[in-house]
Amino acid sequence: MALRRTLLSTLAACAAAAAFAPLAHAQAGDYPNRPIKLIVPFAPGGSTDMVARLLADKMGPILGKAVVVDNKGGAGGSIGADAIAKAAPDGYTIGMATVSTHGANPAIYAKLPYNAVKDFAPITNVMSVPSVFVVHPSVPAKTMQEFVALAKANPGKYTFASPGTGSLGHANIENFMNLAGIDLLHIPYKGAGQAATDALAGQVNAMTDNLPSTLANIQSGKLRPLAVLALKRSPVLPDVPTYTELGYAGMGDGGWFGLVAPAGTPKEIIAKLNAAAHKAMAMPDYLEKQKSISGESMANTPAQFAKQIDAAIARYTAVAKRANIKLD
Image (cartoon, rainbow, N blue to C red):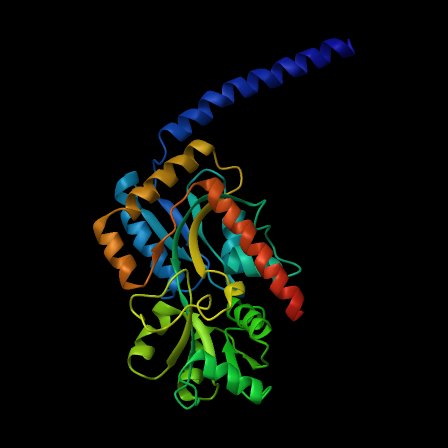
C-alpha cells in the first residue's frame, strides 16, 4: 500500500510538472504583456538613474511595453537591490546593478539583506562611466603627482569627502591611499550631495565622484580634476590621466551599470531582455547620449556579466580587508 501511494504521488508530481512546463514556456513566449518595472537603487538625478532612464526609453518600444523606472534609494543602494532580489522572478521587475550594490557592498556590509551572486540573474552589463578624483582649487597641486607629494609630506593634513563610511567613494580612496602610500583624513557625509557641497566650498580638500555629476563644476573651475578611474581617458577631459597611466593599476577600471533580474527568472526571458538591451544600446541617439556622459558600452552576455560581478566583489573584499572597513 505504501509503495502504491508513493507511485501515485510520483506520477502526480510528474503530471503537474508536465502541465506546468508548457504554461511556463507560454508565459515566456508572450512576454512581456504588461509594463516592466526597472528598479534603480539610488535617488533620481545620479549616474545610475541617468543610465537607467536612457536605457528604459529605448527598450520599451523594442519590447512593445513600457519600461518604468522606479527609484528606491537608501543604504548605499542596498534597499533597492534587496527589492530587486525579492521581486517575483517573472521578468516584470528588473533592476540596475552597480559596482556599489554588486561589488563594494558585499565586501563591506556584514549583514547585507541580499546575496549579490545567489539572489540575482545577470542580464547584461550596460555602460561604464568614469569617476574622477578632484581637489578644491585652494589645494596647491595641479597634478596627481604633486598631490601625492603634498600628502606624503603632510600625513593626515589633507581631507577627502565621501558619501558615507563604507560607500564606494570611501572604498576607492582607501584603495588609492594604500597604493600611493599616503594618509588622507576621511570625512564621511550622508550622501554624495552633501559631500560635493563641502568640496565646492573648500571645507574638504578632495573627493571622488562619477564624472557626469562633477563635470559642470570641473568645467567652471570650481573643482580641479587629477585622475579618472576608467579604461581610458575621457574625451571630455582629454588632459586628465587615468589611475593606470599614473601607475595605480590596482584601482581597477571604473564603475559600471548593468541589468539584473531576480534569481529564477526564466532563461528565455533573460535572453529576450538581453537582446532588447543590446538593440537599444546600438541606436544612434542612445550612443550620442552615452557619449555626452562619457559612457562606454559594456554590452555582454549574462555569463560574462556574472564574471564581472565576481571580480568586483573580489577586488573590494581585498580593499575592505586592507583598510579594515566592515559595517553591520
